[in-house]
Length: 346
Image 1: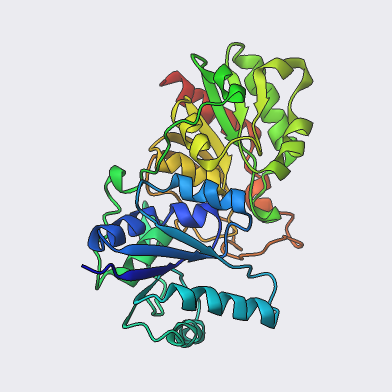
Image 2: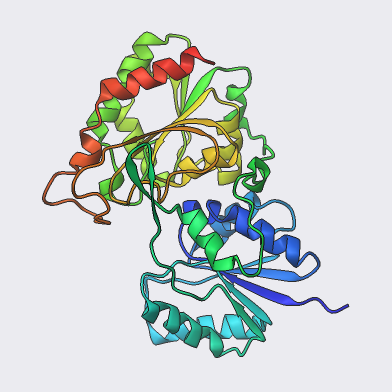
């Protein structure tokens, strides 16, 4: 029997991919023997493409097609057209949430160029709000993407196995020191400035942790660009107990490192979702740049610091007016006390 060619469209970074793992699995379950390609704007280099593919469970995705959204030159547009045309997809499945009917229509028109026999998930969804513990919460991104596909696939978000990724350890010399160690994994990353707790807060917290837990190891993961920031906030007095693996580990290894730790500590970024993918204990310092609930991990045992200020859900990349009070006013002592409680339960 001839294999069908399926094209999944899903843009964004590592976190955007990870919150859609259950959806990829549901699509693969339905199209078990067919060829599935992923069209995404990330990653941009050959090495990072391999890193992204490595986190997918075996045979979930057969091919990744990448494009650069930052350069809207006509030549890049036609290069993308050619890539998709050569792929010749019979079915195109959209996993991208759009903010307006116009954006959905634009995507449908673009993909109609290839005349697929079927298009799935191209629709505009209104915002759904709920009340939990007297607090207004907004529909989670994973739930919303599931609504795009609800007429065609059964997405099981409430099962831990729906979120699992490929985290078989790739042993390297630089990671062997973690064997038999008791350690916390930390990520200080975030795509935008409004997602950053602040280096001074991190510096104070790390010093406090190192002073109070003299046998504990601290391991940092994240992008290569975050490595220099980490070096600047590590307390020199306790330097030997801090290990900066930013830019050293792949997402696949990062997930395994988190799974073997006693706790993950981070901000709203890709590693936060890596921790959720291995169903791990996490303490998350979350900016109110996004609305409460939208990007909170559905999997894992998470405690989330979220300061519900009046301007929550601003989606600003830089906060000029309030100096990021939603996240910078989360106190070091409050975070330390929650870590202390979590460690006591280990």
